[in-house]
Image 1: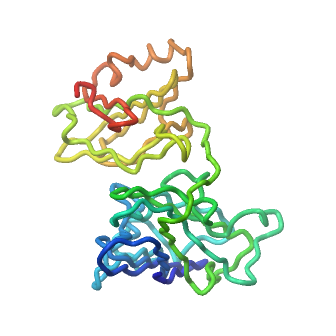
Image 2: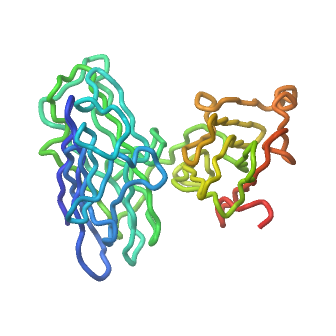
Image 3: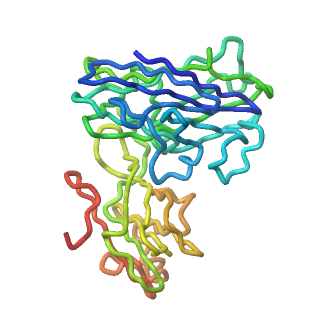
Amino acid sequence: MERRKFLIGVGGSSLGASAIIGSGAFTRIESQRRVKIEVAEDPDAYLGLDGCPDSDNSSYTEIDDSGHLAVEMSPENENSDNDLGSGINSDSFTWFDNVFQICNQGKQDVCVWIDASITEGLELDEDYDDEDIVDFYLGGNREQSLVGEENGILLPVGECICVGIATVTKGLEAGDQLLEDDEIVIHADADAECDSEIVDNGRTAISFAAFCSSTPPTPTADIITISNIVFKTNDELEPVGFSWKSDDDVPIDRIVLKGGREWYVYNFDPGQKSGFVEMEGEDADAYVQPGDQDQLDELEISERSPCGDGFSGVKFEWDSDTGFTPEDD
């Protein structure tokens, strides 16, 4: 069992975790994390902790001089371009998708969950007393909590998950520390049963994604990396969102997602080299609802030419066995 501190406070926060050192297989690990928002953990340990790859929120993390992961949500974080102020805002709901990742680098599949106890005496305003002051959730799926054994998910050998952090501070005061003893425990148990309730976020699953550019060079499959996939449920491999990155000097001007009869179009001006996209109309630049051929014609996109007129690119189709695969593969 490994214990680490997490310091999450209103007006001054940090999230931390230290390393799991050892050799051989593990059956159960309880990894307690320290937050200053500061996390510490050796990325190469059997239960590896690191910043979430290709996520903007991984800028809150760094590897300290001891080789441990640190998550710093305060002005002391020199890696973040965000104006962090003096900590988490009071009187607010705050979400940080895809902050850090947990990897199973052992020899057995494990059930993973997080225990996080709130500091005694903290109470939200009565209108919000059914909310969780702090929650840890899967990737960018804010509906799928990882807190409590009942919410444990299976993490196969060699696989990783990213974890988001949510806070509710309605009625709290500056200086409040949110977690009891400034600790959380990350459990990885090969003997536990991951029989959590199936959570469906209600979105249509992605059938393909197209990465497009309006100027040379044309994006190709070998320069696109897709990671941190968010699934429709915690039971089936049906993607509804993902992080992406373009290697080399090839910015992406447009990403088109299609699922069922729905289309979501993301335009980037200027072109971007990384980001997160999902089947969510609130975030997309254009949403085409089922049967709206007029809007498809206006956007000049189709299954055969998903990037649209004036764009060229590469199309990845989803396969539950192979993941996102270039159309010609």
